[in-house]
Length: 468
Image 1 (cartoon, rainbow, N blue to C red):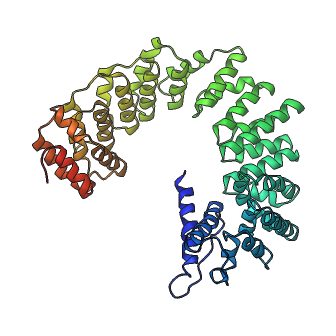
Image 2: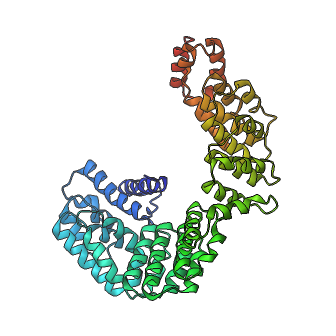
């Protein structure tokens, strides 16, 4: 469960509890949930659970008098049905009651929702679509999923829902629009290029490719796909170059920032009779013109004997190129441990990061004192981080000592990593392995005492045989 959804659920239950407690101090009205589908669902369940726990399921007018919202969520089905017949029931709770397990409640709620859609289709769809889509997963939710496409089709609100911040709503509205067949190939490609949600963008791009397969290529549609933000859409554009008779342009995408797009470009170069390996090698042979993604693209189709060409780029003045060369050597399994160790002190953070990854993957145990020296406060933060990752990977008490030295570092990510290392440390195992004496471990534990509660701290002291 995502943190956002968890917060929404907690908010719904909190509102339910405050409402059944009689409101806020000073008789301030309790605000109802605002538009978040998961909050409304949790609110409905919360009211029912709390009411059942406090009063049971039997109807007692004292508990719902003046609280029409509570009646709509009441454990007793007769109360829920009666609340639906009252004037202006809350639309979100009407939608939830459309999937109620009691048939009479369900049918009455659906009549109310139908009336709302007839009176104000745009406003009702705008307000309830995210909720109805989630309710569609319930046993009686298929009715809502069947209702929405017909209600959306041909209405201007559909375009608004395609821009919704609620991703299920955005995807559903796009699917309804595509099923209606109302867009030409250029508009399909434009929608794919403008879309920032990958699953939705894929629907638009697939529809554009399908349209071009039937009606023939369209250069403007292909150009729209090639200019997209999402890699999958750009890859669709590269694939479409062949049908458009523009396969010669594939070489331009051999250095794209996306591996998917680069792979499609290499495929198309081969289909056009070219050699992607030779093209990529040419792109990195000139140090004055080489780019980081040209190096990455070359490594993806290079051979192990191409290692010297990548090693030559380890001295390139651009840090991003040096980092790409380190990653490329790792991909070719052509690393040189001594050379990599000399690059751990590189001033460019990306280089140190890639060196750390390579050494963790290929190197044997590195000298702990050599790594510890690079965790010292006088080193740049990125060097300290890279060396600390290596110490953690190797294990041993040197990693614990390094973590203690990083507890006051200004970089929040590195500090959090160090704190997590100390919290998860197996202090007793370190003692039993004779990596450190109990006295030293006790001193280290004392320095990090604020990371543990009293019980956790006492337990660790006890396991070290030190007591408290």
